[in-house]
Length: 117
Image (cartoon, rainbow, N blue to C red; front, side):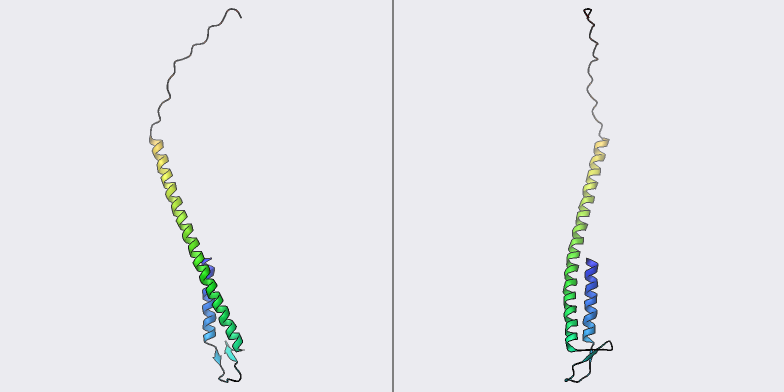
């Protein structure tokens, strides 16, 4: 989303520059301007400016949202690495610690066989 926001900002900037550099014919009765060699009316220049403004605002909001999302992801990733490192250290300590031997019990003797059977 961060990249898409930046692309929209660049497109909006190009449209704004195109809108600024439109050349008029100097005739107030015929408000036709030239944009990249094509004749455009004043309404078209207004719509280009309007679209550029909307794209700029949308691009800025996408960039802001994408930046927050990426920062949260990086923070969570850093926290997970820290937790994994702590877990590995704890496992290493428990492996090096000798375990107590099980208690020894006296051997059991087999029961004597009864002669009645």
